[in-house]
Image 1: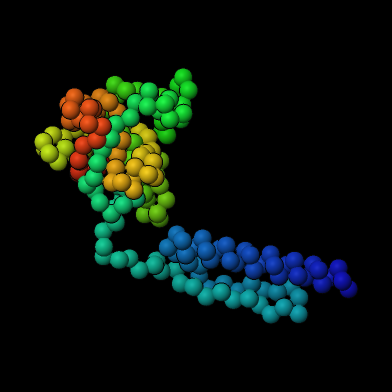
Image 2 (image 1 turned 180 degrees about the vertical axis):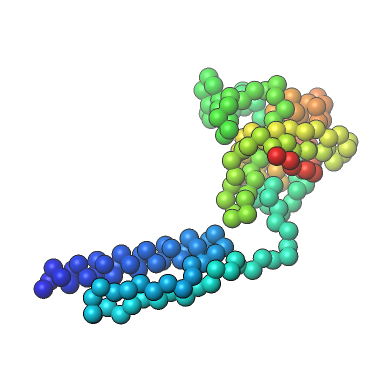
Length: 190
């Protein structure tokens, strides 16, 4: 008798967990499951019905910013190089970016956090990003190749990290010397 009760408890627990995780996943992706009834194989347990609609969750009219974790598209751009990564201890001889390629200081690339529609960070895919220097009006196009900047710089308003070549093209030697420049991310294409 005890073994049957234990098995029944395990089945109930398993069903409850499956429903919990199923509904949680459906809600997080914006859709929920349709009306389903789970038939019971035992006379002791009544059939379980879950009622949800297949309609997507209501969308707000506010535009989402997919560029950074913040709501601003305007902020600071800093630069990072192989030497700075080695100084921080984030790489050895070959420093790999998030896209799997080695960091090249001469490439026109940037590191940013781009958040998808579900709030999760996207992986760098090489899309072109237009970065405009707010003070001079100079614009450069860079490929999104890495994730960054880190949490602390982002909290201080840094929205992207540029390679030395991109920073030099955007702000000249003064930008390299200053270490950061006020920028606006204008356009992203895939």
